[in-house]
Image (tube, rainbow, N blue to C red; front, side, top):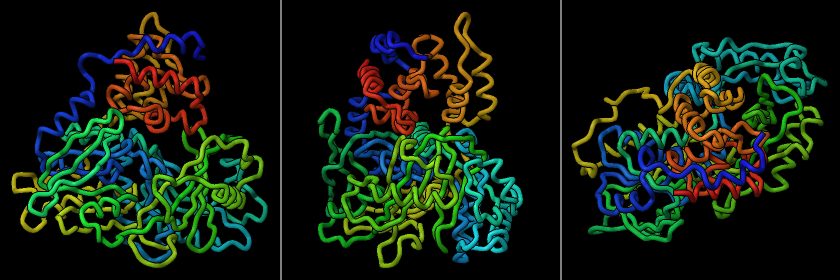
Length: 538
């Protein structure tokens, strides 16, 4: 356990090293202001991050900025899944499911096996439910076939066997359980590793930098005016081409280019709840609500993740939040397949909501296609929005193909065509997480204490081989090897590492997106204060 005396001593520790860490914000601002870039990406969600990564791989001079933190909005408010999209089979989108499976397997097997985990899904079939056992059995078989049976063969399971793996499964009127496989991730960590990959490829990035206006040259958008939200400093960035990848704010930026720009998107809110688990969960539940919707119950980060809602959202994207109505809906829908004791409100540790960006137009948002929309404004700014987490690499490559093929060649000719780039370039830290965890456990400093098994597993599955850098910080300064909170696996060395290597600037950056303290309900005032002290140390 972390003692109170250790917590009080931490502000004197973790001084920023002279070398080996990221540039300071002042250095990055100066670099952005003095250089001229081929591509300025505005928006640090996964779509903008992936585009910047692929653009930098192509040899382009790339800058990426975001008004908040990287993956600070919807990209860290997803259902945490890499999946083929079982429900898309309902609409006959066989090719889409096959393409999603291809991307899912590429990410979980070659690109980021250290950040993705295989997850077995159970679809309970209840008497009077929207789907019968034969239909779901055939559906999961077809689903697994489209994945080349890489996760086993979709099949039916007896209720008794399913209840052994998920003790909280409601078995009243349960006729059968359909089984299939997908993958799971921590979306914040996946996004941060992709930012790191973009930087390693040459991109310059800055979070908490708000666009206050666009720069124009002879009527064309050629950069942006920015304000550092943390220091107040104002600066600008020049670029041959500007890409608007601001997600729910895409139309806001389009109106900076053209005040008369018509809306191009609509928004759908998806809310989730995180709860403490009352028993082990060896599989996830995907329970059909109606013909189109499914509610998920996912074992995630030693917790249980419930969701999601799907309703049109018309308010300020910055104010999206989980309401009492959302909470009641999620718990009510979960109760179709989960016992009451697991759904007590006292078990809720965190709630979050994100906004799906959908093509503009009428219709039920739950039936809308999750497709990527690309538009060009009258000033030549490209705006891109929409898509799915599972296909983030494919979206980045697709956007780059469009940018490289633009009339007039605004990016020039001196770059590597996207088609010639490696198809499955791994993200930083790629490694077998089990091997990394084993090394962390056995390679202890003498005479230092051995790392706790849960901490070793956590570091291995959130950093891959980069976990050894965190272990070295803890070995050099044993107090940084103490837990941030007694009930979480994170250690103080992760806070220092997040500050020096992962662009963490605020307590929320650390507690919500670099670690899991917030989702566990453990971001106490005391912890927040100590994190802020470490972030302020130079």
